[in-house]
Image 1 (cartoon, rainbow, N blue to C red):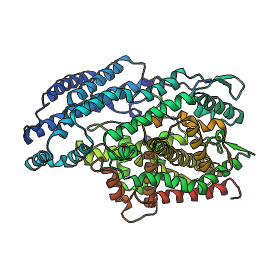
Image 2 (cartoon, protein in one colour; image 1 turned 45 degrees about the vertical axis):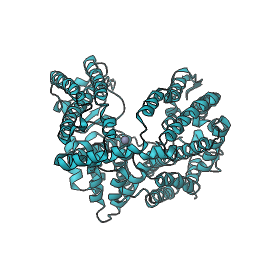
Image 3 (cartoon, rainbow, N blue to C red; image 1 turned 30 degrees about the vertical axis):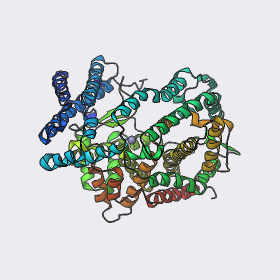
Image 4 (cartoon, rainbow, N blue to C red; image 1 turned 135 degrees about the vertical axis):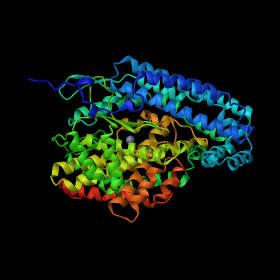
Length: 604
Ligand SMILES: [Zn+2]
């Protein structure tokens, strides 16, 4: 009998491994670039206090800064990706930590830049741009930076705020330490009756167990423990919210939400669309999803711990990697020849590190920097889920590829608000292709439930989080106290509204807010909802063969961060200040739900 062992990296053929040698052929080449960059960073620091000396100096600094940060980016990603090949190797680890400290040096050396620019008269920057043709490219960059000026305080007050920054970080640090290190979860019995330790990481698996007792016990164990700590955690959360309010008032924003939306120039309408759509469509659609799941699982009563219970089986057939590429190419064909040929180029030029090997980093990602290929790390194992991961990560990589090829370095990176759009668009196209392609009931069930999980986790759940954050901040801003009673009650109401009368709201669930680390970076999660919505708008327009849809989408991919995110999307035909894209997303969900009732043979 042969055991299907995880291979050592050296036994995997080169064609299946990414080509990092295209960045640096040897460690020695890396080392040389490292030495040069170290010298370059020291050079940058010398410009402190000199940016106001004229356009020529300003341009000189920017040129040098770009050259240094380009090389620094390469040093950093190469060292880290190299270490991910086999985490047991010490040499790449050493390079990664050298790159890390070089990053810190760089940040310290260039920390003068923003405050110095902000302190210069606006006219001076405009004149520099007029005098030096090469600086016109940086017009948006400076405009965005100078916009911050209205919220910058006097030198003295800024210094005071900077010192208070350490205290602002306390609630989140304490939350992380409490929940990761100090908080004990009880043991439960797994499916075979063996004792099993409960951890946050294992919740994912236990909550998907076919055995309802295991799901229930894991839920009670995890959620019940958070409920026990609700007083301490509500004090930490309250501290975090108070910090948001303190800074927003000190910097003269309308309120804390206004402050969070300001940097990306997102109008509050967008946030209201996120929260409003979820509120409006929960009774129409989420309640139906709960009914469908409850029926498919033949349950008398339905609880939070039944939401992830499997209602389908992942198809058993293995898909080898070349076949996965073929499927992806067919599914993404609506994006046109240019996209497909670049997708294939990525495969043949070895952007992807395909298979698992001993010591390799788990999971999947897309990474790289200006001046390198947009690499992808996979641990491809031949499941249908892995094919989704392939198109998802290649979605990120092609977005990076087009932005880097079409934008100058200063605008090559897209924002977090745009980051999941291309990856999710690819997933939507793959899902549609597979739904049209597979006629057997089991595959359709799997695909539909994969989609339902995505809508629930990425749209409704995140929108509920966004709703919660807006309510808690408003409450505190008008002088209210964030007691556990207030927070539990709010969470219970939001869940009851989201899931409807078919779901029993257990006491443990009411304290779930205490478990969410995202709440310590306020008003961030709405971006998952906007990303999902934009992706749905793009994929629907492309699949409906709307005129110009493909070109508009490719232009979006090529835009990087050359404008405010909302403008980039608007130019590509997706206006998130309007209800349209959100309603369209809900329409798709509604249609797929109706289909689900048919496939599972349940009366709607
Ligand atoms: Zn992603």
